[in-house]
Amino acid sequence: RSKVTKLWGNSPAGLFGYSHLLGGYSGGQAEYLRVPYADVGPIKVPEGLSDEQVLFLSDIFPTGYMAAEFCDIQPGDTIAVWGCGPVGQMAIRSAFLLGAERVLAIDTVPERLALAASAGALTLDFLEEDIYDRIMELTHGRGADACIDAVGTEANASASWDSRWDRIKVATFMGTDRPHVLRQAIHCCRNFGTVSIVGVYGGFLDKVPMGSAINRGLTFRMAQTPVQHYLPTLMGRIERGEIDPSFVITHRATLEEGPDLYKTFRDKQDGCIKVVMKP
Image 1 (tube, helix red, strand yellow):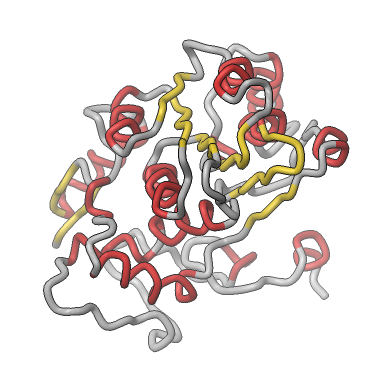
Image 2: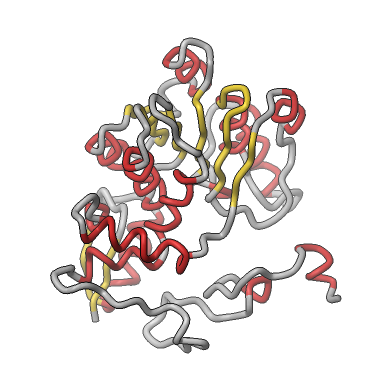
């Protein structure tokens, strides 16, 4: 076994753009790419559905749906979602599709919070209020029934000491990830609740309160999304009109405009949430 395998474990699948840890396939964000085993992924699109309606079956819709499915949602449940980017937006709507009574959407970008609110979520700005205190207030001290981390390693700094410490460690090469959201999700989850993790973590996490999770009987569910598994179910939901994933598109562009829009998305400018580029 290689040193990488001993460190990370066996690779469960091949993913584009995830280095040799997951197959060594080049990323798909390019004008040209090689698609090995190309007969594995295709699915027939029913008549009457547009490209934009089904485009996000390739990743973000199955990922957001899986995040909500992991929560084992029951009638009356409150689901908290950290991160209102594209995957978080899909998780919010998927939670409602699966029967959540209330969804709490946590972010600080106004356009993202507005889009979450348009789905019926109650929005919380982590720079304006203490998320733990607010969730406890909204749930009468119980905590959310399930918490979804749709952020992962790229968590932005808040005023909390642990968030600032994460950034210092990464900046000084003493750490690889910033798991502030995961810590907060654990603390905000009710006893015997579920923490669903679809945000990507690339290395080893520091100061994750496992003692709290064990004492309170939390369930952790996490995965890289098995997209093909979800395709028939989600295609059916789109075809029946239960959801139109194209709601998340904020910008449409040509390939020539792509480089500028990468910067726009990175810097969270111009209300940019999801870009679709057409040749």
